[in-house]
Image (cartoon, rainbow, N blue to C red; front, side):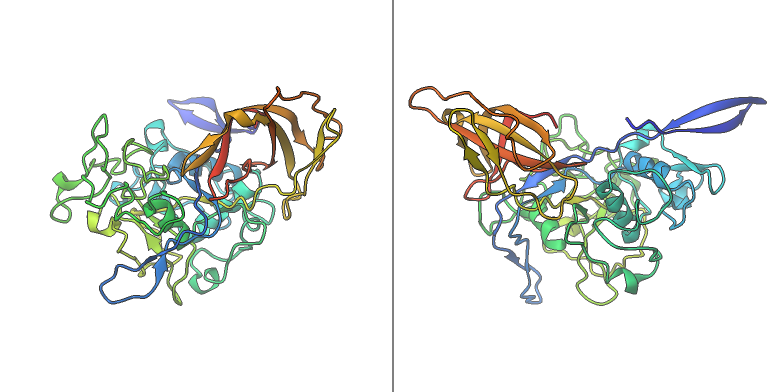
Length: 439
Protein backbone atom coordinates (compact mmCIF):
# COMPACT_ATOMS: atom_id res chain seq x y z
CA UNK A 1 0.00 0.00 0.00
CA UNK A 2 1.46 3.35 -0.96
CA UNK A 3 1.51 5.99 1.75
CA UNK A 4 -0.24 8.73 -0.18
CA UNK A 5 -3.15 10.20 1.75
CA UNK A 6 -5.22 12.87 -0.03
CA UNK A 7 -7.53 14.79 2.27
CA UNK A 8 -10.69 16.37 0.89
CA UNK A 9 -13.64 17.99 2.59
CA UNK A 10 -17.29 17.15 2.10
CA UNK A 11 -20.30 19.03 3.47
CA UNK A 12 -22.83 16.46 4.73
CA UNK A 13 -26.03 17.57 6.47
CA UNK A 14 -24.34 20.79 7.55
CA UNK A 15 -21.37 18.99 9.19
CA UNK A 16 -17.86 19.37 7.79
CA UNK A 17 -16.17 15.95 7.69
CA UNK A 18 -12.76 14.78 6.46
CA UNK A 19 -12.60 12.02 3.85
CA UNK A 20 -9.33 10.11 3.36
CA UNK A 21 -8.56 8.83 -0.15
CA UNK A 22 -5.79 6.23 -0.24
CA UNK A 23 -3.92 5.38 -3.43
CA UNK A 24 -3.44 1.62 -3.47
CA UNK A 25 -0.85 -0.28 -5.43
CA UNK A 26 -2.30 -1.53 -8.72
CA UNK A 27 -1.68 -5.22 -9.35
CA UNK A 28 -2.25 -6.41 -12.92
CA UNK A 29 -2.36 -10.21 -13.12
CA UNK A 30 -0.62 -11.57 -16.20
CA UNK A 31 -0.45 -14.97 -17.90
CA UNK A 32 2.62 -16.35 -19.72
CA UNK A 33 2.14 -16.82 -23.46
CA UNK A 34 4.88 -19.16 -24.61
CA UNK A 35 5.44 -21.36 -27.66
CA UNK A 36 7.58 -18.69 -29.36
CA UNK A 37 7.89 -19.06 -33.11
CA UNK A 38 4.40 -20.48 -33.63
CA UNK A 39 3.13 -20.06 -37.20
CA UNK A 40 0.38 -17.52 -37.69
CA UNK A 41 -3.03 -18.41 -39.03
CA UNK A 42 -4.05 -17.15 -42.46
CA UNK A 43 -6.95 -14.73 -42.41
CA UNK A 44 -10.34 -16.42 -42.44
CA UNK A 45 -11.98 -13.56 -44.29
CA UNK A 46 -13.88 -14.62 -47.40
CA UNK A 47 -12.16 -11.95 -49.51
CA UNK A 48 -8.93 -13.97 -49.76
CA UNK A 49 -6.87 -11.74 -47.44
CA UNK A 50 -3.38 -13.33 -47.43
CA UNK A 51 -2.45 -11.91 -43.99
CA UNK A 52 -1.38 -14.30 -41.23
CA UNK A 53 -2.38 -13.55 -37.63
CA UNK A 54 -1.11 -14.76 -34.28
CA UNK A 55 2.50 -15.66 -35.03
CA UNK A 56 4.80 -14.36 -32.25
CA UNK A 57 8.48 -15.34 -32.03
CA UNK A 58 9.04 -14.41 -28.37
CA UNK A 59 7.52 -15.19 -24.99
CA UNK A 60 5.43 -12.47 -23.35
CA UNK A 61 2.78 -12.13 -20.68
CA UNK A 62 -0.82 -11.09 -21.39
CA UNK A 63 -3.11 -9.38 -18.92
CA UNK A 64 -5.37 -12.03 -17.41
CA UNK A 65 -8.26 -9.55 -17.38
CA UNK A 66 -9.25 -6.27 -18.99
CA UNK A 67 -8.14 -3.19 -17.05
CA UNK A 68 -10.82 -2.47 -14.47
CA UNK A 69 -12.52 0.69 -13.27
CA UNK A 70 -10.87 0.21 -9.88
CA UNK A 71 -7.37 0.01 -11.35
CA UNK A 72 -7.99 3.04 -13.54
CA UNK A 73 -9.31 4.98 -10.53
CA UNK A 74 -6.01 4.42 -8.68
CA UNK A 75 -4.20 5.69 -11.77
CA UNK A 76 -6.32 8.85 -11.82
CA UNK A 77 -5.73 9.52 -8.13
CA UNK A 78 -1.98 9.20 -8.73
CA UNK A 79 -1.60 11.52 -11.73
CA UNK A 80 -4.81 13.43 -12.43
CA UNK A 81 -5.21 15.93 -9.58
CA UNK A 82 -4.77 18.26 -12.55
CA UNK A 83 -6.00 16.29 -15.54
CA UNK A 84 -3.75 17.79 -18.20
CA UNK A 85 -4.39 15.18 -20.89
CA UNK A 86 -8.05 14.33 -20.19
CA UNK A 87 -7.55 10.90 -18.68
CA UNK A 88 -11.00 11.21 -17.12
CA UNK A 89 -14.17 11.39 -19.21
CA UNK A 90 -17.33 12.69 -17.53
CA UNK A 91 -19.33 9.98 -19.32
CA UNK A 92 -17.70 7.49 -16.95
CA UNK A 93 -20.04 8.67 -14.17
CA UNK A 94 -23.00 6.36 -14.66
CA UNK A 95 -25.10 7.91 -11.90
CA UNK A 96 -24.78 11.35 -13.48
CA UNK A 97 -25.78 10.14 -16.99
CA UNK A 98 -27.09 6.55 -17.05
CA UNK A 99 -27.74 6.63 -20.79
CA UNK A 100 -23.97 6.65 -21.47
CA UNK A 101 -23.48 3.29 -19.72
CA UNK A 102 -20.28 4.49 -18.04
CA UNK A 103 -18.15 2.51 -15.57
CA UNK A 104 -19.21 4.83 -12.70
CA UNK A 105 -15.88 6.43 -11.83
CA UNK A 106 -16.68 9.74 -10.14
CA UNK A 107 -14.59 12.89 -9.90
CA UNK A 108 -14.73 15.29 -6.97
CA UNK A 109 -13.16 18.70 -6.34
CA UNK A 110 -11.58 21.27 -8.60
CA UNK A 111 -8.69 21.14 -11.05
CA UNK A 112 -5.46 20.97 -9.09
CA UNK A 113 -7.08 18.93 -6.33
CA UNK A 114 -9.30 16.45 -8.20
CA UNK A 115 -9.90 13.10 -6.52
CA UNK A 116 -11.60 10.04 -7.98
CA UNK A 117 -13.63 7.15 -6.59
CA UNK A 118 -15.53 4.08 -7.72
CA UNK A 119 -17.92 1.97 -5.64
CA UNK A 120 -16.84 -1.61 -4.79
CA UNK A 121 -19.62 -3.17 -6.88
CA UNK A 122 -18.26 -1.35 -9.97
CA UNK A 123 -14.53 -1.56 -9.28
CA UNK A 124 -13.89 -5.05 -10.70
CA UNK A 125 -15.69 -4.39 -13.97
CA UNK A 126 -13.80 -3.09 -17.04
CA UNK A 127 -13.17 0.60 -17.50
CA UNK A 128 -14.70 2.30 -20.54
CA UNK A 129 -14.65 5.71 -22.24
CA UNK A 130 -10.87 5.51 -22.56
CA UNK A 131 -8.98 6.24 -25.78
CA UNK A 132 -5.74 4.74 -27.03
CA UNK A 133 -3.73 7.64 -25.59
CA UNK A 134 -5.26 6.99 -22.15
CA UNK A 135 -4.21 3.33 -22.39
CA UNK A 136 -0.66 4.34 -23.39
CA UNK A 137 -0.39 6.72 -20.43
CA UNK A 138 -1.64 4.00 -18.08
CA UNK A 139 1.04 1.63 -19.48
CA UNK A 140 3.74 4.30 -19.02
CA UNK A 141 2.63 4.84 -15.43
CA UNK A 142 3.02 1.13 -14.68
CA UNK A 143 6.39 1.06 -16.48
CA UNK A 144 7.58 3.94 -14.29
CA UNK A 145 6.61 2.19 -11.03
CA UNK A 146 3.22 3.85 -10.40
CA UNK A 147 4.55 7.28 -9.40
CA UNK A 148 2.44 10.13 -8.03
CA UNK A 149 2.53 13.58 -9.57
CA UNK A 150 1.70 15.70 -12.59
CA UNK A 151 1.25 14.16 -16.03
CA UNK A 152 4.81 14.58 -17.29
CA UNK A 153 7.83 12.60 -18.56
CA UNK A 154 8.30 10.90 -15.18
CA UNK A 155 4.74 9.59 -14.91
CA UNK A 156 2.64 9.29 -18.10
CA UNK A 157 4.46 10.90 -21.03
CA UNK A 158 7.45 8.57 -21.35
CA UNK A 159 8.21 5.00 -20.36
CA UNK A 160 7.11 2.18 -22.65
CA UNK A 161 5.98 4.84 -25.14
CA UNK A 162 7.14 8.40 -25.79
CA UNK A 163 3.86 10.28 -26.12
CA UNK A 164 4.95 13.60 -24.56
CA UNK A 165 1.85 15.75 -24.68
CA UNK A 166 0.17 14.39 -27.82
CA UNK A 167 -3.56 15.19 -27.45
CA UNK A 168 -5.89 12.23 -27.05
CA UNK A 169 -7.78 13.22 -30.22
CA UNK A 170 -4.73 13.60 -32.52
CA UNK A 171 -5.12 10.37 -34.49
CA UNK A 172 -2.40 11.10 -37.04
CA UNK A 173 0.18 11.83 -34.33
CA UNK A 174 -0.83 8.87 -32.18
CA UNK A 175 -0.32 6.54 -35.15
CA UNK A 176 3.41 7.31 -34.99
CA UNK A 177 3.79 6.38 -31.31
CA UNK A 178 5.62 3.04 -31.02
CA UNK A 179 7.13 0.92 -28.26
CA UNK A 180 10.46 2.01 -26.94
CA UNK A 181 13.30 -0.56 -26.93
CA UNK A 182 13.10 -0.98 -23.14
CA UNK A 183 9.28 -1.15 -23.02
CA UNK A 184 7.73 -3.32 -20.32
CA UNK A 185 3.97 -2.75 -19.94
CA UNK A 186 2.46 -2.38 -23.41
CA UNK A 187 -0.77 -2.45 -25.36
CA UNK A 188 -0.66 -5.81 -27.16
CA UNK A 189 -0.04 -5.91 -30.88
CA UNK A 190 -2.71 -7.55 -33.01
CA UNK A 191 -0.57 -10.71 -33.25
CA UNK A 192 0.00 -10.83 -29.48
CA UNK A 193 -3.72 -10.34 -28.83
CA UNK A 194 -4.73 -12.96 -31.42
CA UNK A 195 -2.29 -15.55 -30.11
CA UNK A 196 -3.33 -15.13 -26.46
CA UNK A 197 -7.00 -15.40 -27.42
CA UNK A 198 -7.12 -18.11 -30.09
CA UNK A 199 -3.92 -20.19 -30.22
CA UNK A 200 -4.49 -23.68 -28.81
CA UNK A 201 -1.37 -23.52 -26.59
CA UNK A 202 -0.34 -26.93 -27.91
CA UNK A 203 3.29 -26.22 -28.70
CA UNK A 204 4.88 -24.43 -31.65
CA UNK A 205 1.90 -25.07 -33.90
CA UNK A 206 -0.42 -23.14 -36.17
CA UNK A 207 -3.56 -24.45 -34.44
CA UNK A 208 -6.22 -21.93 -33.42
CA UNK A 209 -9.73 -21.95 -31.98
CA UNK A 210 -12.53 -19.83 -33.41
CA UNK A 211 -13.33 -18.18 -30.08
CA UNK A 212 -11.30 -16.93 -27.14
CA UNK A 213 -13.10 -19.38 -24.85
CA UNK A 214 -11.09 -22.31 -26.28
CA UNK A 215 -13.91 -23.42 -28.56
CA UNK A 216 -14.95 -23.59 -32.21
CA UNK A 217 -18.69 -23.40 -31.53
CA UNK A 218 -19.72 -19.95 -30.39
CA UNK A 219 -20.25 -19.35 -26.66
CA UNK A 220 -23.52 -18.87 -24.78
CA UNK A 221 -24.13 -15.60 -22.97
CA UNK A 222 -25.63 -16.71 -19.67
CA UNK A 223 -23.97 -15.86 -16.35
CA UNK A 224 -24.17 -19.15 -14.45
CA UNK A 225 -22.63 -20.19 -11.15
CA UNK A 226 -20.72 -22.41 -11.55
CA UNK A 227 -19.76 -21.50 -15.08
CA UNK A 228 -20.16 -24.54 -17.37
CA UNK A 229 -17.52 -23.30 -19.82
CA UNK A 230 -17.73 -21.60 -23.22
CA UNK A 231 -19.73 -18.66 -21.91
CA UNK A 232 -19.12 -14.94 -22.44
CA UNK A 233 -20.71 -11.54 -21.90
CA UNK A 234 -22.42 -10.35 -25.08
CA UNK A 235 -25.84 -9.56 -26.52
CA UNK A 236 -27.93 -12.30 -28.09
CA UNK A 237 -30.94 -11.85 -30.34
CA UNK A 238 -32.54 -8.72 -31.79
CA UNK A 239 -30.34 -5.64 -31.34
CA UNK A 240 -31.21 -3.73 -28.19
CA UNK A 241 -33.66 -6.34 -26.87
CA UNK A 242 -33.32 -6.04 -23.06
CA UNK A 243 -33.75 -9.80 -22.68
CA UNK A 244 -30.67 -10.42 -24.83
CA UNK A 245 -28.02 -9.03 -22.48
CA UNK A 246 -25.90 -11.21 -20.22
CA UNK A 247 -26.67 -8.73 -17.44
CA UNK A 248 -28.66 -5.54 -17.80
CA UNK A 249 -28.34 -2.04 -16.37
CA UNK A 250 -26.79 -0.55 -14.42
CA UNK A 251 -23.64 -2.65 -14.74
CA UNK A 252 -24.04 -4.17 -18.24
CA UNK A 253 -20.51 -5.58 -17.95
CA UNK A 254 -19.60 -8.61 -15.84
CA UNK A 255 -16.81 -8.62 -13.27
CA UNK A 256 -13.35 -9.80 -14.25
CA UNK A 257 -13.29 -13.60 -14.44
CA UNK A 258 -17.04 -13.99 -13.89
CA UNK A 259 -17.10 -16.81 -16.47
CA UNK A 260 -14.49 -18.69 -14.47
CA UNK A 261 -14.30 -21.79 -16.70
CA UNK A 262 -14.33 -19.95 -20.03
CA UNK A 263 -10.75 -18.73 -20.36
CA UNK A 264 -8.58 -18.92 -23.44
CA UNK A 265 -6.16 -21.88 -23.61
CA UNK A 266 -3.45 -19.67 -22.06
CA UNK A 267 -5.74 -18.59 -19.21
CA UNK A 268 -6.92 -15.09 -20.17
CA UNK A 269 -10.51 -14.01 -19.61
CA UNK A 270 -12.94 -11.90 -21.64
CA UNK A 271 -11.03 -12.12 -24.90
CA UNK A 272 -14.53 -13.08 -25.92
CA UNK A 273 -17.05 -10.39 -25.07
CA UNK A 274 -17.45 -7.88 -22.23
CA UNK A 275 -15.36 -5.16 -23.95
CA UNK A 276 -13.90 -4.53 -27.37
CA UNK A 277 -10.19 -3.86 -26.88
CA UNK A 278 -7.50 -1.64 -28.39
CA UNK A 279 -4.37 -3.15 -29.90
CA UNK A 280 -1.14 -1.41 -30.80
CA UNK A 281 -1.44 -2.23 -34.51
CA UNK A 282 -2.12 0.42 -37.16
CA UNK A 283 -3.09 -1.55 -40.30
CA UNK A 284 -3.58 1.55 -42.45
CA UNK A 285 -3.57 5.32 -42.16
CA UNK A 286 -6.06 6.77 -39.66
CA UNK A 287 -7.11 3.33 -38.41
CA UNK A 288 -6.40 1.52 -35.15
CA UNK A 289 -6.93 -2.25 -34.98
CA UNK A 290 -9.50 -3.40 -32.41
CA UNK A 291 -10.33 -6.94 -31.39
CA UNK A 292 -13.22 -8.77 -29.70
CA UNK A 293 -16.93 -8.18 -29.36
CA UNK A 294 -18.63 -6.53 -26.41
CA UNK A 295 -21.45 -6.73 -23.92
CA UNK A 296 -23.64 -4.75 -26.33
CA UNK A 297 -23.03 -6.65 -29.58
CA UNK A 298 -23.55 -10.18 -30.92
CA UNK A 299 -21.23 -13.18 -30.71
CA UNK A 300 -20.15 -12.99 -34.37
CA UNK A 301 -17.79 -10.11 -33.58
CA UNK A 302 -15.85 -12.34 -31.17
CA UNK A 303 -14.94 -14.86 -33.87
CA UNK A 304 -11.28 -15.01 -34.95
CA UNK A 305 -12.34 -14.16 -38.50
CA UNK A 306 -13.69 -10.77 -37.45
CA UNK A 307 -11.48 -7.68 -37.70
CA UNK A 308 -12.69 -4.26 -36.62
CA UNK A 309 -10.75 -1.74 -38.71
CA UNK A 310 -13.18 1.17 -38.52
CA UNK A 311 -11.98 2.57 -35.20
CA UNK A 312 -9.53 5.37 -34.42
CA UNK A 313 -7.08 6.00 -31.61
CA UNK A 314 -9.31 8.81 -30.35
CA UNK A 315 -12.49 6.70 -30.13
CA UNK A 316 -14.06 6.43 -26.69
CA UNK A 317 -17.19 4.31 -26.30
CA UNK A 318 -19.16 2.42 -23.67
CA UNK A 319 -18.13 -0.81 -25.44
CA UNK A 320 -14.39 -0.06 -25.75
CA UNK A 321 -11.68 -0.80 -23.18
CA UNK A 322 -8.21 -2.30 -23.10
CA UNK A 323 -5.90 -4.86 -21.54
CA UNK A 324 -2.13 -4.74 -21.25
CA UNK A 325 0.70 -7.12 -21.98
CA UNK A 326 4.18 -7.35 -20.47
CA UNK A 327 7.23 -7.73 -22.69
CA UNK A 328 9.82 -9.42 -20.50
CA UNK A 329 12.53 -9.77 -23.08
CA UNK A 330 14.74 -12.82 -22.90
CA UNK A 331 15.66 -14.64 -19.74
CA UNK A 332 18.93 -13.79 -17.99
CA UNK A 333 21.75 -15.37 -20.00
CA UNK A 334 25.21 -16.89 -19.58
CA UNK A 335 24.94 -18.14 -15.99
CA UNK A 336 28.40 -19.34 -14.98
CA UNK A 337 29.42 -21.26 -11.84
CA UNK A 338 32.77 -21.24 -10.01
CA UNK A 339 34.45 -23.10 -7.14
CA UNK A 340 32.77 -26.52 -6.72
CA UNK A 341 33.29 -26.51 -2.93
CA UNK A 342 31.52 -23.22 -2.16
CA UNK A 343 29.72 -22.45 -5.39
CA UNK A 344 29.08 -18.92 -6.56
CA UNK A 345 27.85 -17.65 -9.92
CA UNK A 346 27.80 -14.69 -12.23
CA UNK A 347 25.64 -13.85 -15.23
CA UNK A 348 25.05 -11.27 -17.93
CA UNK A 349 23.04 -8.13 -17.02
CA UNK A 350 19.66 -7.54 -18.63
CA UNK A 351 20.16 -4.92 -21.33
CA UNK A 352 17.79 -1.96 -21.19
CA UNK A 353 16.82 -2.61 -17.55
CA UNK A 354 19.01 -0.24 -15.63
CA UNK A 355 17.26 -0.74 -12.28
CA UNK A 356 17.08 -4.53 -12.32
CA UNK A 357 18.02 -6.72 -9.36
CA UNK A 358 18.53 -10.49 -9.57
CA UNK A 359 17.52 -13.67 -7.76
CA UNK A 360 19.58 -16.88 -7.79
CA UNK A 361 17.85 -20.14 -6.87
CA UNK A 362 18.76 -23.82 -6.65
CA UNK A 363 16.64 -26.83 -7.62
CA UNK A 364 17.11 -30.59 -7.67
CA UNK A 365 17.41 -32.24 -11.08
CA UNK A 366 15.39 -35.20 -9.79
CA UNK A 367 12.34 -32.93 -9.39
CA UNK A 368 12.39 -31.70 -12.98
CA UNK A 369 9.29 -32.48 -15.06
CA UNK A 370 7.17 -30.76 -17.68
CA UNK A 371 4.61 -30.78 -20.46
CA UNK A 372 3.81 -28.74 -23.55
CA UNK A 373 2.98 -25.62 -21.52
CA UNK A 374 5.66 -25.42 -18.78
CA UNK A 375 8.84 -26.89 -17.33
CA UNK A 376 8.18 -27.71 -13.66
CA UNK A 377 11.33 -27.12 -11.61
CA UNK A 378 9.82 -28.42 -8.38
CA UNK A 379 10.78 -26.85 -5.02
CA UNK A 380 13.43 -24.11 -5.25
CA UNK A 381 15.85 -22.81 -2.61
CA UNK A 382 16.84 -19.14 -2.72
CA UNK A 383 20.61 -18.60 -2.78
CA UNK A 384 20.60 -14.81 -3.21
CA UNK A 385 17.63 -12.47 -3.22
CA UNK A 386 17.69 -9.02 -4.86
CA UNK A 387 21.33 -8.98 -5.93
CA UNK A 388 22.36 -5.47 -6.95
CA UNK A 389 25.01 -6.77 -9.34
CA UNK A 390 25.52 -9.74 -11.65
CA UNK A 391 27.24 -12.06 -9.18
CA UNK A 392 26.52 -14.14 -6.09
CA UNK A 393 30.14 -14.14 -4.97
CA UNK A 394 29.17 -12.95 -1.48
CA UNK A 395 26.56 -15.71 -1.15
CA UNK A 396 28.32 -19.05 -1.70
CA UNK A 397 26.27 -22.25 -1.79
CA UNK A 398 28.17 -24.95 0.06
CA UNK A 399 25.41 -27.57 -0.29
CA UNK A 400 26.28 -30.69 -2.29
CA UNK A 401 23.83 -32.95 -4.10
CA UNK A 402 23.34 -36.52 -2.93
CA UNK A 403 25.29 -39.23 -4.81
CA UNK A 404 24.03 -39.85 -8.36
CA UNK A 405 21.97 -36.62 -8.32
CA UNK A 406 22.61 -33.06 -9.45
CA UNK A 407 21.57 -29.51 -8.63
CA UNK A 408 20.28 -27.00 -11.14
CA UNK A 409 20.75 -23.24 -10.71
CA UNK A 410 18.64 -20.49 -12.21
CA UNK A 411 18.63 -16.71 -12.19
CA UNK A 412 15.89 -14.18 -12.90
CA UNK A 413 15.67 -10.40 -12.98
CA UNK A 414 13.26 -8.09 -11.18
CA UNK A 415 12.54 -4.48 -12.05
CA UNK A 416 9.44 -3.24 -10.30
CA UNK A 417 6.71 -4.01 -11.13
CA UNK A 418 8.10 -6.80 -13.33
CA UNK A 419 9.42 -10.17 -12.26
CA UNK A 420 11.30 -11.93 -15.04
CA UNK A 421 11.21 -15.67 -15.79
CA UNK A 422 13.53 -18.41 -14.59
CA UNK A 423 14.11 -19.08 -18.27
CA UNK A 424 12.51 -21.27 -20.91
CA UNK A 425 12.74 -24.84 -22.18
CA UNK A 426 13.98 -25.71 -25.65
CA UNK A 427 10.41 -25.50 -26.97
CA UNK A 428 9.77 -22.13 -25.37
CA UNK A 429 7.95 -23.50 -22.31
CA UNK A 430 8.38 -21.25 -19.28
CA UNK A 431 10.23 -22.72 -16.28
CA UNK A 432 8.14 -22.54 -13.11
CA UNK A 433 8.88 -23.66 -9.55
CA UNK A 434 7.62 -23.40 -5.99
CA UNK A 435 9.20 -21.52 -3.13
CA UNK A 436 12.54 -19.96 -3.98
CA UNK A 437 13.23 -16.25 -3.68
CA UNK A 438 10.65 -13.76 -2.45
CA UNK A 439 9.21 -11.40 -5.09
